[in-house]
Image (cartoon, rainbow, N blue to C red; front, side):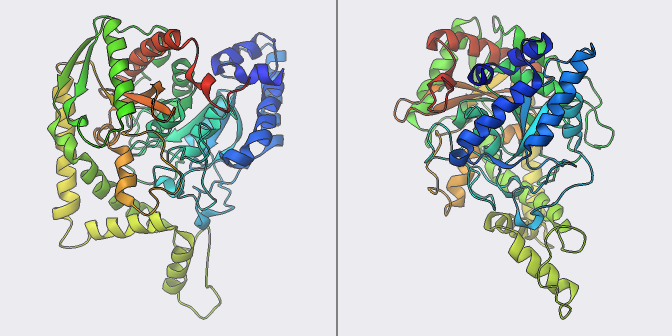
Length: 500
């Protein structure tokens, strides 16, 4: 029974719980058993609270017994990225500086998961403060990719992507600042979405870069991702950047994927050197599938995309240096050297030196320099100007096409440790995903096959205008359906951690 429940999609599991074919408690126990079985190898979770999860599941079952109407995901277990505050579990952002911290409040995303009846299994591993592309920057050790445990699961939301790919949870939350949902989704063979910036609330999300951070879903298929997207998105008056507009009809789009007559643009600037041949092969084949389904495919040019990576790595570290100034050893979290002989400034310096990891320190230093007197206009100001040009390129492209597509990542999952000492090589993993963050557009990654040279997953990225998130799901669902027919099932069924 346990294996049967784990194989179900989130939508199927939610329906089975509503119809009384199984219970939320049975589903939760199945996934808790799975975590016990495999997470020693994967290390997707930083914290699991089995009793709290079972208590949430019992509450869902009690509501059903009382005749209450349950939502589509009520009783479905979920893995929650450890960057969202949770009042009943630690929230560490995978950093020593917050080790053991229990927030006094829930993030809006957390609140909405609870309100929808989802069962939070625990908190997942991540790059410290969401800074990284491999989940190797966690203070508590790296996470492994279930397709090959010697390789990275992507980042910063690598714990969430690995949990879903290893069948430790049917759904997971993540945050996308420069690609931190789409990139791990791609290398783990999942669906991952970056909603329109402001479409999902940042309240209670430990900030990395406030003008970029975007909560979003991970799932094994497009419909499940859309259901989770809808469950936690929408206007939040507690978030000043939240958009006061209805959630786009992402679930309807996911249920009725159709690209007939749709105009799809291939970005010219995302071609060239640096791409793994197998990634380009699978991407090209996926575009041909979309064309065979009735889409009109054209090439478009977005010249400013060439400078997106440089602009991002000035804007994001600048905002990070400002946001992380709050970790000062005075109010909460780690405090080092406070023996009564040192000043507050000395205690602060010792705490930040001990509590932050190397990548966080690197970005704080870079951002502080970019914001410093005499350099602000040359660096941060120029990067913001490039950001404006990138948005204009998107706007110009969307006058001619409905969506843009590209490979999600230039390569498949690279080996653990390969890029740890080469920050530029690590940053290039986000080459294709960063422009959508800088512009605030909606974007989605869907699996499009396995690279022939290493047998690892490849993702196709779909980008749409602001608040046109439903277009990404429409294209993703159409491609997913066509490829599933071609493959004779889901891609994840070929994973070593697939449930038999």
